[in-house]
Amino acid sequence: MTEERLYTLFARYHKGEATPEEIAALQEYLQQVPDREAQLRGLLQRAWEEQDQPDSAFINYRKEEMWQHIVRKEPAAFARRRRMRYAVAAVFLLAAAIPAYLWLRTAPVATVVSAVPKDDVQPGHSGAVLRLSDGRTIVLDSAADGMVARQGDIDVVKKDGRISYSGTTTGDLLYNDVMTDRGRQWQLTLPDGTRVWLNAASSIRYPLAFTGNERLVEMSGEVFFDVAHNNKQPFRVKTGSLVIEDIGTAFNINAYTDERSVNTTLVEGKAKVYNNNKTVVLQPGQQARATGNELLTVNNGVNLEETTAWKDGMFHYEHADIQTILRQFARWYDITVHYEGAVPDDKYFMIMNRNNKLSSALKVLKAAGIGFRIEDQHLYVTAPAEKGQPVRSN
Image (cartoon, rainbow, N blue to C red; front, side):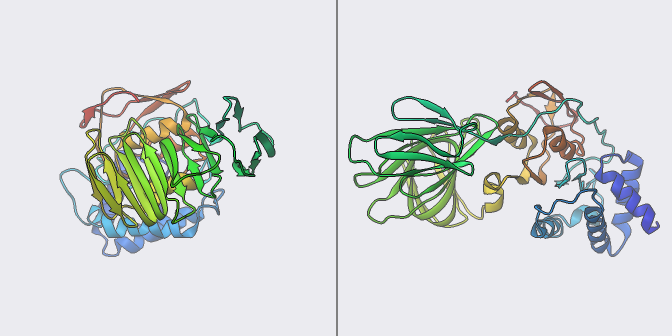
């Protein structure tokens, strides 16, 4: 096979335009050549360089990270045939100019690729509602930079898409709430200097002054904390029956009610997680999981970039099923997901910018043979029902 013919096949596969026969020819060739890793690396590099509008924000180390994922975790996919053919789908979002990579472990060769949805949904953006101590609410999306409220002697200041507090209070303890809807995210700095990131459909409640022997806040949804440590006044987060205590810490808490467990992932420092039955102390890279029956377990070796990617404006999945991915899409794009029939239980590797429109995000997944259609704010998943299990709508 000539170099140009090889690249033509690969480029068509990138765009989801390759026929089953072309996919089979590409796989057949890559299975036979002794230097397939070098060939694949060259194809990936050329495809990246020939994008119409390369995005410099998608930094170089992510390219290497994707390549290492292929070489390290899935070399057999190009080394041998199995009864179920393996395929790699390198999908670059040319229309949106945001590179993405999808690693499909079990996609059959004879995949039918659906058409790109005609309708579209814009991605989420920065925005939240601030509820003051007297019950008044302020829509932070539209508030101008500067002081947005005064509560006693404390000013609430908005600047560069986040809020912070200045001043002190010696009177009654006052509380504020920050709440994000689906399709919104927000940042704030608490009165003690702790930085907080709220994902979509999340909330946090906190006092305007931390008094007593602890700093206690309550949250729901998904929140990342970079805690201003204070040995004399530990920082604690309450979500449901779970309490997370800072010991010099940055950590992420995912407590969405539609997830299987409440996950606390430690990025740096130490953290103590406890409920009514058990206490665990986390080291960086560990994750505490609390299920509905309050069972508390520790998972080692968590991928921190995958867990915190949302905070940095990215979708990042390394071994995720379609339902996990689309639950996040539902919150970020403010859509309702409907599954028509059974959905394959394949696992995917995917990295892409969250600023893409929904149709661009679906271009990545459609390479796996999963069909979609968009009607208003509803996404209908029409995947082939060859395998998998029935699921409920989100």
